[in-house]
Image (tube, rainbow, N blue to C red; front, side, top):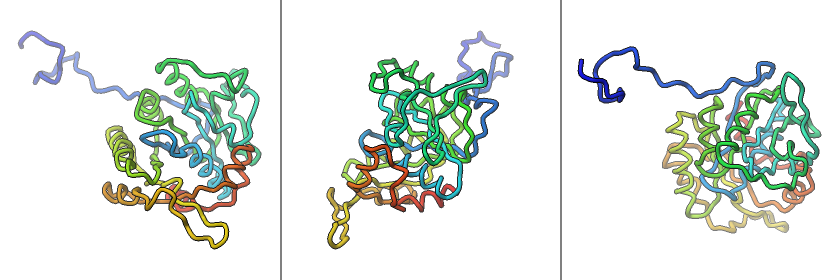
Length: 271
């Protein structure tokens, strides 16, 4: 046998030092009960990922399921605001309790751990990734469906979620603009590299409905998401409008009162 270079990829020998790749998946809290886990992702920010996550959790709750939201957007958390949640989450020796919304949706977010919810989170990447992992390993979830509101892009936190949380699938959120093809491409490739199934795409801000005649007005032109989805053999599950009433409910912390059924097809795909 020649001298070992410690680079197993260049060696045809079988030795005691050779090891199989180790899984980075983390176990949830032993006292937690979690059914399916889905990530809501996008290749860029500002497309309404948190809005889609919130409405999806509400939709699934209305269909009789216990739902939860793990807010992995640590530096820009918006989920508590949408649901009108304030104050700090509590814990015990068993773990950390998620806060519950008016209709019983469980939520964990950095904003529910801060003394002042407007304080900025100025942490480096490894610390942020560690917090997201703790939202999985330490929180006493009790839900049929847990939705992970991912941060934008494909950086540290997104990679940490893909590697440490056993996702059953992801939903990609995009907007109608031309650059959607590049954004979708990035999200699809990351999911493929991480071997996570893709449920499909949701196009947000697709249109605004005329208050007089109900006609759909395409503010950004005809959306490019359908074409991007077709190129990757994925379904376009929903086109969500710009809805001033929904925006007002979100600002008031009353997103559970919205009446839209735009995500029913997504709910059906998940079920």
